[in-house]
Length: 120
Picture: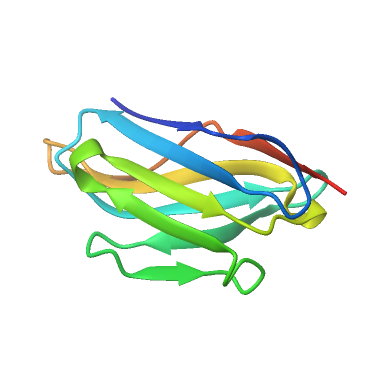
């Protein structure tokens, strides 16, 4: 089995910063793309940022210039550095990894999420 566990969420004032982490563990042969998504109350889940196995990155327009995604392949971990946070960034943040298992099966795996709350 594969598990993804997020951490680093919390309550922060507008303009502040948080750093989220997502560690993948279990039956992993390799990890391709990893990404962050978020879901605000009463809204659907939206894409925030992704990073390829070669560390190419892409960002949603709403976070471009404020958030930075990175990864540590040796630790099977992806990070999201969030700066200049705004109240509209309040959401549950989820990580997703496209993971190849030793059985040579590729699948998308999700974490359970971490709450980020930005007060005005």
